Length: 537
Ligand SMILES: *[C@@H]1O[C@H](CO)[C@@H](O)[C@H](O)[C@H]1NC(C)=O
Ligand SMILES: *[C@@H]1O[C@H](CO)[C@@H](O)[C@H](O)[C@H]1NC(C)=O
Ligand SMILES: *[C@@H]1O[C@H](CO)[C@@H](O)[C@H](O)[C@H]1NC(C)=O
Ligand SMILES: *[C@@H]1O[C@H](CO)[C@@H](O)[C@H](O)[C@H]1NC(C)=O
Ligand SMILES: *[C@@H]1O[C@H](CO)[C@@H](O)[C@H](O)[C@H]1NC(C)=O
Ligand SMILES: *[C@@H]1O[C@H](CO)[C@@H](O)[C@H](O)[C@H]1NC(C)=O
Image 1 (cartoon, rainbow, N blue to C red):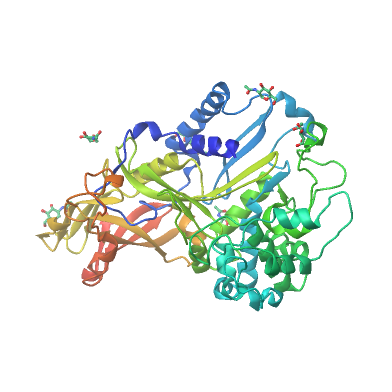
Image 2: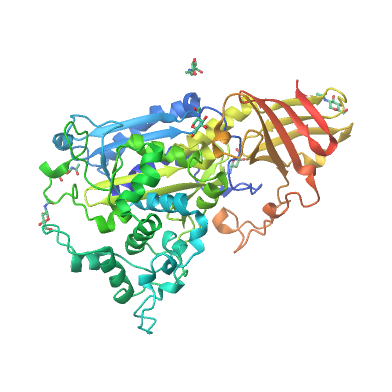
């Protein structure tokens, strides 16, 4: 896991230096993007800066020995749903790894193992096949063989009737690892010695619970072996056939497989020639659902875009899926199904020492000598240069959203939107309603709500062309949070006493603004409560 931590740190690390200390912004913004995300970030100066810095960051990790220059081979792809394309690619092939590249190079199409990133696709397939409502169903509804464990000692056995599909997907079933099952049943040098029934029998009769159900998240390979059988049962096929039918074929993921790619002209990282202990080609079908996939960057990108663009799941289901369902012992690590969510504090505007929270949805995986990380940032047009993308959004907001807007029919109704250093979202620099100075609102902030006229598809959030109406809400910051909690950079004790998220439309829709965009540029603002349309001047 050393590799992924180091790489994630450098993907995110561009800005850490600008925030010596976390001072959470006083506005307590809604969680989610600060600004609209429907712009093409690939040519923004912030992203261009990130691109130019990145090789130096990697070089630094080589020099400090955090990454091994001669041994490692890795490929990084940063992509955006605004273009459905890569923004940035980086490849490194260490001298000692050259021989493992069967095509002679490492590129977008080179297939590697992706380990437990697999788990994300097992859950994706289950939701795509059966809907997210299966999360509420007891797993015994699909795998009745797990029911009826006669052992009544709670320390010794799992009562599978209490375990839901969601508990398994969210890593909250206490179902433990799978190593002891493999030790008992699998010998790679011999033909198949077990069946799915053996797996279920083992987990019903022999598996000791690790935690009680839903207590908290505890990583479970065993749970994902069981989930693989849930998917298989849902389709009445093997797991391998099921993911092919539900995910790989519909999304055109030609490189993705649960078993080692074969044939001629392969473009893969096959490490058998340099490491006799390699996990390459060590395929055990019964645990295919927990950590056995092979994939290339192109297919991971396609899958990520499919998620962000709500291709297989409805937008509402996608948003429900991309939420934390448990905390951990760390303030910055949350767990979903089975998202590993990094809670980041990022500067609200470039160079600011005030931060806002942004959640990065990742799933990491490793198979002995292979490591993979998959990360989606819905706040940021699906990229991974997080702070750079945040800055690009601010840059875009300054260029295309900020400005003065006047009601032509009644010029004494007008407003000026601003991007303000050190503050999240858009500011109301001035706001006149029929000659009355709504200066009370001068410190309020406007945040996008994700609602737009084009469609409910999440892909419309990244639409850069055409006309689009998007809703914003004006949010009143907490008047002077007296004692911000210490973890938020304040001097207070346990709580912030911030109620910002509770106040939207509390006294009616006077906080709603509709933005009319043409090719990403804000041309007019509607203020529905007064029936005004304010045009850019
Ligand atoms: C990228 O930005 C530069 C400078 O702002 C501009 O000259 C160039 O045309 C842009 N390229 C694209 C493809 O938009
Ligand atoms: C990289 O790995 C090789 C082989 O494992 C080792 O000999 C070498 O010292 C390592 N290099 C660094 C900089 O750690
Ligand atoms: C990206 O793909 C989605 C479909 O998944 C599509 O709706 C959207 O228009 C595409 N965007 C661009 C810029 O091609
Ligand atoms: C392979 O595994 C064996 C047994 O664990 C170990 O002794 C050996 O050093 C390993 N070889 C390599 C190249 O890592
Ligand atoms: C944060 O930035 C503001 C504005 O630039 C400055 O006045 C303030 O001293 C800074 N605070 C810290 C703790 O650096
Ligand atoms: C906005 O309205 C106020 C009050 O009528 C007026 O003083 C101001 O000049 C107007 N601003 C613009 C840009 O029209």
